[in-house]
Image 1: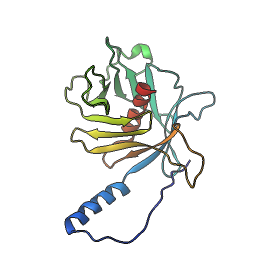
Image 2: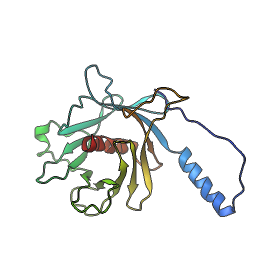
Image 3: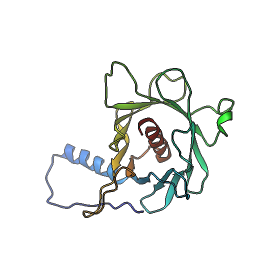
Image 4: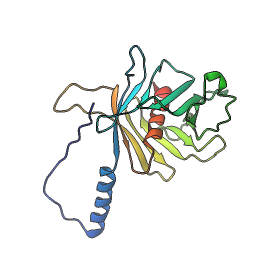
Length: 216
């Protein structure tokens, strides 16, 4: 599956020098973005999961045996090597809490005894008095961190989300994949993950998996 990009052309509009510099910066950031096609389906027969395709058509990431709401999810590269293990942190209360580990931490029963420390924890936004209904979840740099490192805004159900750092700079986005030339709509099973320069596309995909667990 390939990601098709369209280009547009038209008359050149004159801008002040400051605006031209800002526009050049935005264009350079857009050109350097990594665009991935996410398919909500495993390539393995009779398995549920995710398949992530690069702009060159190569298989980048995959998740297999993704059924219901598992306690543990392993994000793998195209060859099946584990990248992240995502674990549901069982706590009292109504808030979804997840931990992200590098590599593989073992079977479900060994999660509590692993010597590895999580590199991120993710908490679903839940507040009786909602101050910002647009925020879906917060990402923290470990269990003990009080200030979030990233927040996710938008609507995963509509495949329209953006990941922002704590300076509110957009680092990644989830968008619907548009049909080409009036073709058949892709629906919600195929969508685009756009990753800005400097942000790890593997981690962006891990966040996609968590959003799918929280809001599907």
